[in-house]
Image (cartoon, rainbow, N blue to C red):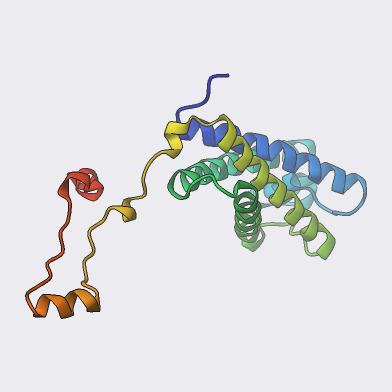
Length: 195
């Protein structure tokens, strides 16, 4: 299988896969009466003027599109985080990211004064947390598995940056004029990015 070499496309695809799983969990939660409101209704509540409109099929379509778009944006962000921080422990990183990203998006959506469909019950919010954790895990696993290794090979800039402040040991040795830090300019990644 040919792997995806573009970070943006990889983020969109992995975010979409995570969104599908999150939506499936949301649907199951609604049908079992665990959650009172779907992601779609909550997202639509930001853009429409009444709860009735948010729960209509047009409101559900609008909310679904907004939720999927935010999930794809989250996928792009997650791919960039994986590129900078590595793919190890991707299940743990994915669950943490999903819950955190979902909490931020949920807080923003619920915080708008125009939102007529804010979930206020604990079971709906717990269902959202479960869905967001699954979203993060699936997004991270998909990105890690179908992304080309070259996307994740970039060395962090901080690993090659020259120190700007001497350590105490360096200062003490430099005062005795016996120590001089030696920096290898052949491997100076920071200068490559800045020039």
